Image 1 (spheres, helix red, strand yellow):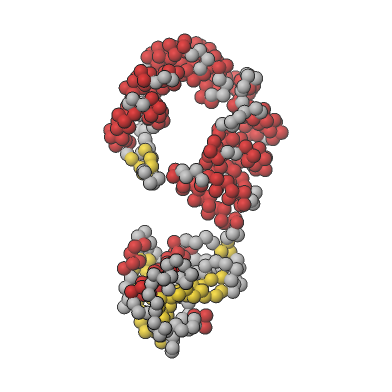
Image 2 (cartoon, one colour):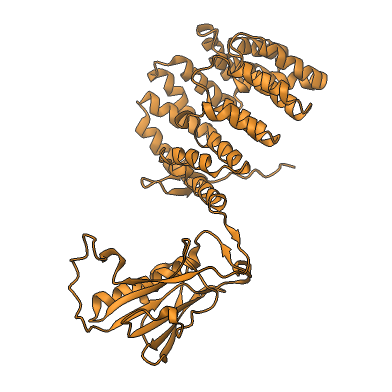
Length: 472
């Protein structure tokens, strides 16, 4: 019985940095052929297309391109490797052996060529010769993880854990070897709980390497983090972190270690460094860390039942045209006797999972934003399109922060008696279920008489629907 293989869609980014998902058949039949045509006579571009296609398991689709690459590429070793790997992926071991044998004759110290030649011989059933060539590849470049881990796996299968360790020690003893030391450190942490030995292996690996490859810090930070040695992780990796070289994967581990040790400040520094790289494919993860840092930095969480001191901010007119701004002179001045209408914001009925049973400090959410944004928008519209003055009353905590109440604000409260206001429009958002409901109460401040109440439906997935809110 043949098991079903599921191939994931291809993810890419458009010209605006937005992630798009493309079905594999569309990519195979439309996108990839177009890319190959565009780069057909550009060695660097064509090589990059082939590399990505091999990662996406489109080897047969780029076989023609891989055969063409040696004809235009001055980097004959890379061209031979890409053709050899393409042939290996489609299991044409005989031709792969032919291509890579010729390449090995020209480049006898190229570890990549020798490792793939060993795979071709293994595919042809020549296992002893394959292992001999594999060791030659490791001697040529002991830090190619593909070849090193394959060799170690062969030894472990034959002799168990001790043979695995001896194989790593043998590779670690080769000139310029550092990757085997990382794996010896992993063994020391995971099998022996021996931090001291692991740190010695890390020092061996890091000695004299410049620039430092990203996968070194990825493995060190990952292994120390998984073993709970967070201070050692920061001690070893943070001074060597270069955002351009080491990127998101190492940055992730550093940020997590800082947060787990209660250090939001240094975590924010790493996050800001990652933001400077302007990588659209990192955005989702960076936004996640932004929120996590905020949680620790701003001490989010329950604050008990004691009511903090709250005041109402009085925002008169559109916030973008406030007095003192360059836009303040754009709008015509209002008559001094103009009617003043203030919209009261900052109250939301939440669904049970989000309903706080006590005073809670938390990052702003969609419900809280809408509880402020819609009154600001309506006040702006009143101010611009009518003779009246539009204003907003926004609840604000004394020590800083917007306030969102679970119940509508009492329109008769003295706190809502801003000077000169003729009418209040109390806004309350009902967000227990979707679509949301905007609930309005129009009050005459002179005698606190409710003149009208009405409701409008809001779609939280399409906030433009809020612009359709009408008066009764």
